Image (cartoon, rainbow, N blue to C red; front, side):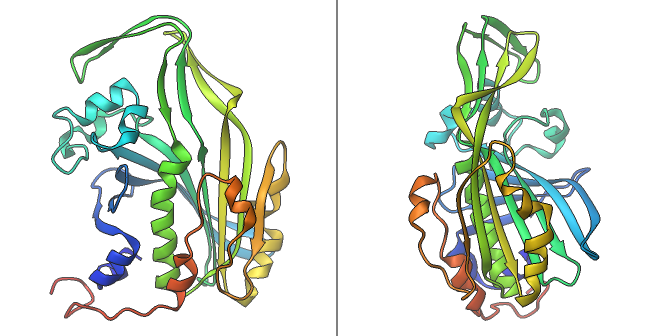
Length: 301
């Protein structure tokens, strides 16, 4: 998908993709610079395997979505003291990403805003994309806590009951998810045939300075957005896949679940109840053809 996007400047402009760069490290990862985004995104693979369901083989992969916030965006203030000061330190370069020599120094849990799961059929005729996060990724301290960050050589005092982090994780992660859906639709010439959006009780991280726990709370909600792309035989995955079958499990509340058999987008009244709006481009780009502006497909000329 990323190679194809490099062929046409018009296509990249239409989906708001300003730039992509591979992250050289121990895990497969990429940086994304998007138009009107709260920061630079990092998409990092965590796990990948093959699975067998209903006598059909599928590839599964799970990714961590990170966002390195721009200091001049309103979302910047919602990140933790440590995250904000790292971005403004010499640990980051002018691209608003970690310097190569400091990539492994930054704790892996920092800057994470969402997770992305992908299931694809081995024949490329079907794919499910799942974005999961919470409306607010919140960290609250129940006791006054004195912190010291060696990498920053900074001290910080968190007051009793202070909320140190309150990132709108789902909304921030959705900006990258939106771009990826547009990329997939145009590259594979497939439009979404089903979209499902569910809501669950949220969690918050609570710290007393020496111990961290996670508790359910009504102060925030967990969200799960699943998009199914497929040809006419995608129905088998829709019926049998755990990814679609468990939508109504536990305390999940289905906000909407809609089939798009015609291959075109139709607005949903239920979208007003969700924090995001579906992008009609996911459907229109499946039928859009862009001419390559390069002399070769490798991008060298």
